[in-house]
Length: 135
Image (cartoon, rainbow, N blue to C red; front, side, top):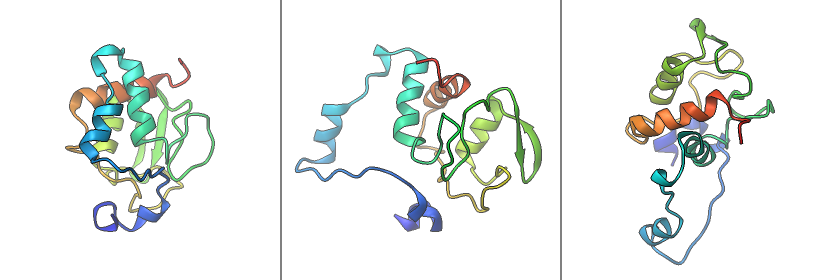
């Protein structure tokens, strides 16, 4: 795992389940049906499985910055101030070290999600980040 995620892997918080079944069998049982949910719900699901271990939505401190109140504001980064918008989220998802939020270590502990999330999934995630309190 450290080869994939880097030195910050030990800081990542994730639940691990040991199962008697193959990964494919487990995924079939728990498979999320994107077409059965709206964009925000899909984004919430993606946040829960990919982001919630490091990013809060309630302002609490975690390994990464909270999303609470971020949307539409300004992100203070080591490369200057940038709008917290679709472009910033997309760039951060694909290249977490492009602009690291002030107060967080460089290199970022966040792994890249480039190639792991589809453009549609990133858009779902953006819909959730815009208003995480909607639910």
